[in-house]
Image (cartoon, rainbow, N blue to C red; front, side, top):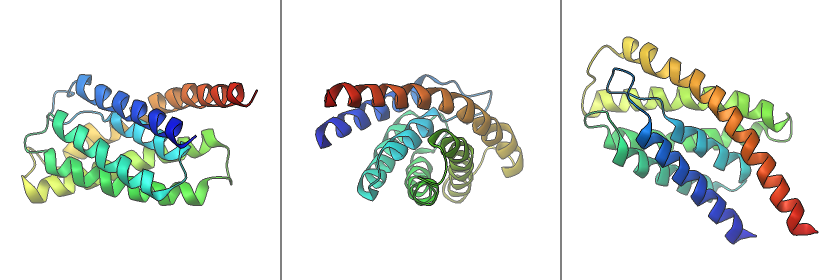
Length: 172
């Protein structure tokens, strides 16, 4: 069972890396981050901190390798690790109290907001921003929150139903 979960996690993180690579920058050096969506799904289907921390590091490496933001490698690493930790705590609080779809509907925009804020702040401190913080936030983070919510809920429904069907077939 552990091996199966590790393989599913690896596939989801690889899909997130691929989505991050092919997603265009929206006229800015910043792009929507669909890798976050996959990270949040991995965190949702796993309950242990070690997986959350490692998934944050891995997706941070992937997004650092594929960033379109000049000098965005280190800010991507920082942002994904911090975001994975905070979202893990949020999921610990919400899981079991709400339906999974509602939990994801809460986590996707909040996690994207946290990620965007941490990325912009760390980029501002490390390499500088190519514009005003507020304008970059409004032009990149807010649309990413909306996109991640819509895409994330669709992808989560597919992954969750496939995951349930796969586990059900295994127990028969």
